Length: 223
Image (cartoon, rainbow, N blue to C red; front, top):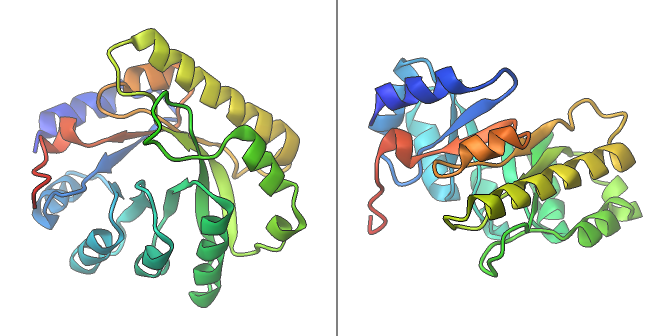
């Protein structure tokens, strides 16, 4: 845990940019330390891990789900999740709506776009997303709220490529906002940027950066 680095990142953020502390594979004790330091927004990649931490930690923590979400895991996060960053298909969004209805709440969501030059990344194309937004079936989803978009850049040292990809995501955000969400003030979030590339993401318009290893240190993925 690097509280000094956390403070440094927080102090560097422009107005309108929020930090999501990515706590995946880190113990609840580490989250509690950052919570005691005043931080409230944490990001997790695994639904059952997030559920276990939610049960252990203070209930005013704002839990963000940022990983690939399987439909059979939605039930673990639907009662309390503050924002799902990673809606990458219409079928997933419909399932989230179903569990939101069961929990008598509206779940805020971001639409994830495939902007990277990597096949392993998930996400909509703009054409797929517009087809969904124009469909009568989408209009029937009353228990989800689309708050913006998310994307991950290619893992590369080529900063100009990363910048182009983030710029492209910002263009997608503006296109969707102007065509489908102009009357919706909640459609305002652009989630992009992680430890390696968040300064570029901020310069390209990010409103939510997802920082993990710079704050919590390297992860042990074998746990």
